[in-house]
Image (cartoon, rainbow, N blue to C red; front, top):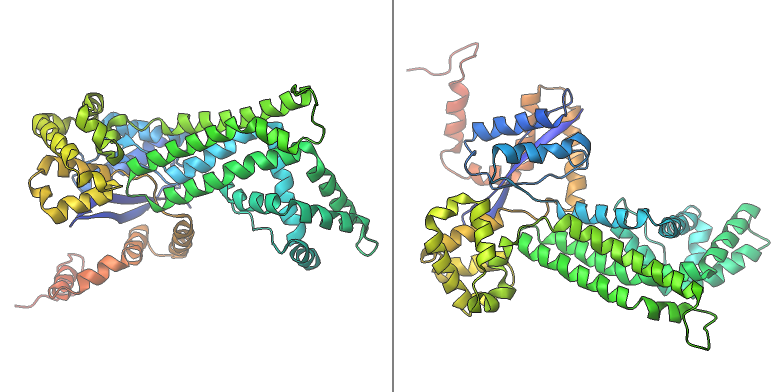
Length: 451
């Protein structure tokens, strides 16, 4: 069974809200057109045709194959429905694709995963690893960036791990298969190529892990996430500049003449290729974000004060024509915003929005406030990894329920939006309203309304 879950994201009472609406069974037809029909029906039901400003999807099924056309269909019907990537999923995909086409990297990561599997499948091996290195290999998750933790252990405990594998390969106590496997791993980690790649990825992967965590925790600020991606690109460029130095550090046979040997040239080219692939993939995936996000980039307020960002402003009007009728007022308020030193102290759009509300400026700069709210409605990512997993378990529970599809969606609404339900129940009129709805249902076996 396949289900399509619908959420609305909006600003209410000075807060960004993501509200679950319902889920529908799409097992019969999962084509882009069929999914589009489901979305359009819900938009019509809630009369949101003119309020749709963006769309984003969480789930590989929607982002692959024919379903990649879904966002295009929606944007053809609703031009303001800008498509925004799910950042964390996109980062994971980018990193995978960046190294999958490099044979040396595929072998490297397969071997690294083999280390974790080798030492986790037997308690005696795990204990031996702890005794030698005082470390355990982390369990490898489904997301590629989790390999950062494994790379960190391999890089920090390389000497201890090598000594352990030497003892295991020469041991007369261990079985033949274990000793042979240990010897194979020992030969691999002793090679220059492994040590070179380990140093390269030991510098890239921690930065990727930080970026991944940042994207997961800052879903309310797509502009901030965009800047973090730019920072990651700068970090990768620094690693690229250090490739020659990394080779010199791991080179066992340096040339006295100072000239780069053929092997050195090959490894330097490999390091450049890794960094260039990652940077290129990152730019291809995340450059789709329009530059009108710079309008509320707090870090650029000082430069915007000197030179107004006309191109970004034009792109905003092009994407969201509803601002054209108030463009003069909006431009004037943006100029005031850039000139206010207190506004420039905030780091994210969410913080800027809070400042405008608490200071009372939101009532004065009404058009800027609308723009800030629009930015807040554009998500950088959906839910976190752990929350995704727990939600999936709840969904599976719903699917096992044998009641009708409509009923299942109602149960899902009550469960997922339990916090909202609790708030509504505190209202004095709640129970009377529920009773009125129940008794006024047309298809009843007996009457409950007596006069």
